[in-house]
Image (cartoon, rainbow, N blue to C red; front, side, top):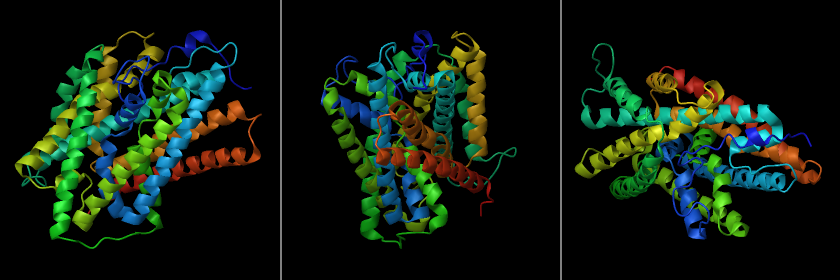
Length: 422
């Protein structure tokens, strides 16, 4: 059927990182429907939502909402494809339990499949952490240096100084060999983020009640790929769907639970993006929290998000370390390797000033590959002899469209990042 089996390697790539592979709520062997829904929410809701109002400004709010729901539906469909592919393979003789996206890639396409998935995992996780540093440095400059953001000291702006100030602390946090005891911070981060989103939306509603700026429904076709990239980034939990389905107590209803979760998150995202744009119009910034003022509540919200994203950084980098250490140091702990990766992430964040632009780049490149192309490709390889012609055309179309969106979206995002800013 075009896929191999190797019990030793197939079990070697289960990532033990919260938000990406290891659910944090409830008994890992049996999760109720409510706990599964909560885990899905934790897995998907991330920092990408903070760039949605700016994206809606760039694309137009109607087009942004339509794109968001389309991406949500496509992500949901591809998540179900991963579950279906895993179930099919595990039903065959000779296949060991598939616990991660990397295991599935190996089961379908051998070592090359695992390599491709591992590479995308590295790029996506590191990309998430770059966006965290951009958010933290930009927000800190906005809160503590609002009058001097355009000034420089020794050739560096306040944003750059705050970014480099994060480096030694991140070197220390990322030196911890095992981060299991830091897992509760991920839950705390999501609770704070949801609370912060509620505060921001309430602020937006107050601004809208006093000021209604001009907004556009559609801003032109030249920002389509940009919008798709950011929306794809916002639904970042594709790597967690297999572990979540494994631990679900009632697997027959997992698809329905996943659909309800995706629907709720989509409505939340659309409301958050639209309200932010409606409140500030053309003044909407790439990080919406910098639009909500400098009062005590606003400052606490922004600092809370900074602290939680800062502490989530080592958790999100852990899959990167596991892949690299498995491949290059026989699975043993490598301090210098971890420090080198932290430095690389900081250097990338240093060179990308705009938060939403970078979300679009990561979403257009690695997130589209992980979220759309690989699930359809793996499902197509495994089910090719049983698939109807219509289903075959649909999944081939998703693969082709995903590749086109990925290539052109990456190109347009890079142009946007490196274009001269006024």
